[in-house]
Length: 174
Image (cartoon, rainbow, N blue to C red; front, top):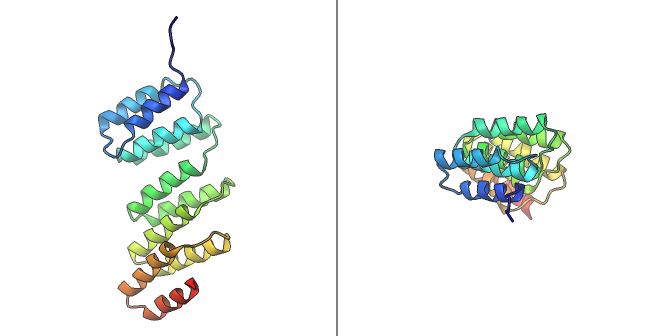
């Protein structure tokens, strides 16, 4: 009797390759096993996208998102969140917003982490207006803001000498 690996086994291998120190060879191995999956589901796609991001290969990650659409696999919040966070860490706030908007357009509820990533990216760029704009959009979306949501913007205000706005934001926290 032979035991044959299934999609769960292949996805587990992909996750093992997608560690924080994911190298190009780890990504190649992850892609090899991804290609052996009969019908990849959102979990398998999420895993290979994570491997691409950990290997700093955003172009491959984006190609897998396109591949998901071509294969009628609906992305979930986790998939979008990985992309949003990647761009935010690179201070590419506009790309983070692009994917947050796509997420919302696809009727996938965004969580606090997605909004905070966008707010942080704009704050780190010193773009206080857009950071405040996304903080307000987060509030309108009825998501519970946290200290991080405000602290990012308050710190950017401090860096830009906008103490009045920083004080008003602090008061809104209460």
